[in-house]
Length: 230
Image 1 (cartoon, rainbow, N blue to C red):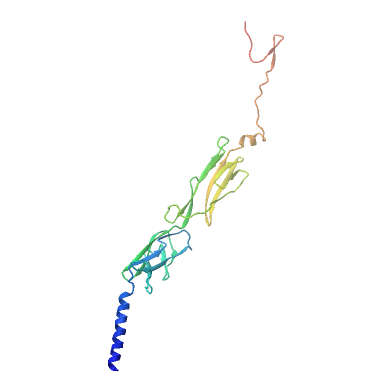
Image 2: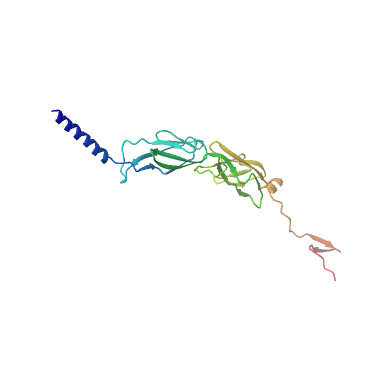
């Protein structure tokens, strides 16, 4: 009976050895997505990673850890959740033993709204002008996100502004045009002389008279516009 027990134990040991030899070996870490872009202070992204064998099949039971190359730009928790911190670029790494995979992260946070014109002068000959607004990140680079800039005129009786930033003079005077994006804003001063001539003459333009006058010369009437000499 003792000998039979030895045979059983030996068979179990051989079986375990064979099974261990047949277990798939992790050859690569696969991570998804391979790059992410975050454009808001509270923006997050979820990464997933898995270990695969040489055939691309997932190997179960492989523990994966996460790390960020620059926690001032983006941080990552133990489950692969990435959070924006500050504008810049960072690399998130998923690692399992000697295997690793990287994810490129770009963070662009809106910090400033800049106008290409800080003052406008609108005249009767040039009653319109367009202001362009650019959203910049913390590093002074164009913001990578998408959003709508809103425009407003402090006095639409002087000048109006449309959704594209085109300012149109209405009457003579001074006002301001403001561009806003979320909690960011920028202003441009507007001076308008549009309608100035009409305002000075009570709303009507004075026309020069072209009517010819009659003059009496030597008892005879002549039509003005020059006299004849013989």
